[in-house]
Length: 215
Image 1: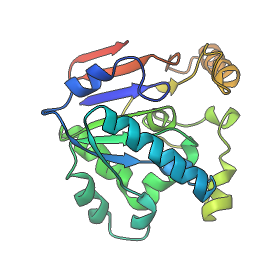
Image 2: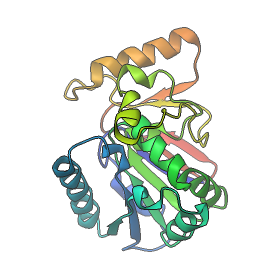
Image 3: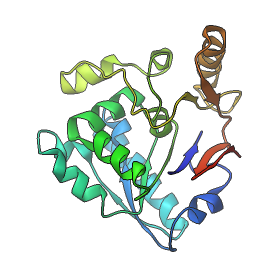
Image 4: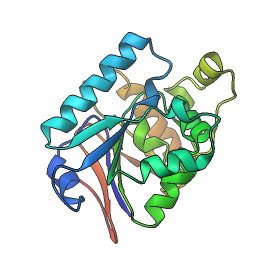
């Protein structure tokens, strides 16, 4: 399994992301559905920023909007994602992203592809948080009711379970507006004995086969 999970944006080690890929210039599926509760203008701007950052690394990014796969057979998104050696999931609302993964069938598709080491999963903030066993605790930062407002569905509280612990971004990162609340979430997890890893902005959780490291 290969993961590159940053606290914020590309993090401080984009070279390690590129090192996970079999060849330079990889086609990259950009999942920006964590922004689905934002205005269309704000969402488009968020997609553009990811496309620009990934292109600057020499990658070939294309947005895959999971909303297009709602209600379709799970095989449709599975076949689409299988075309890409890299999936990049950007930040935003973790509950909105988790809903999109579930409604499209991308959650099962991604866990299957990762289990076969058929792609690299990378991203930041919400994009990493959804890989945990559960999203409980993140409601202190992200509004789970946004799922109901936007889609009319209840939020999904289970994560994908790719990680065996929660991931808490933006901890002790005073330049980020969510740092204070997420630092408190990490403290709550510690007090309750919830397995987790905390990341400061600039840090990355890297998984490359048997290697797991916070950089």
